[in-house]
Length: 118
Image (cartoon, rainbow, N blue to C red):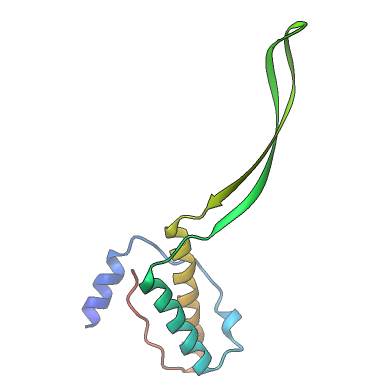
């Protein structure tokens, strides 16, 4: 069983993002276990990428032909759109949270077994 966990961990192409375990220091063992289980279920069901909406403003220099002939002048563009984090970056963040919970649990002496990672 241990070799299966090691082999599964090595096959993973997504590395956990660092998340500080200090944010979980106020949790007791039951809360840590519940949070670890919630994240494990989220990973098992398939991590979805949250969409974010943003506004971008760009400044530049443009050129072109107008009424007075050729010219160069400043240009400003404003764009509104949606950005979607990749599933790998979301999975990396979630795996980092799970690692932080496991570290906090280990520090407190709580029995949480690290599950295999996708």
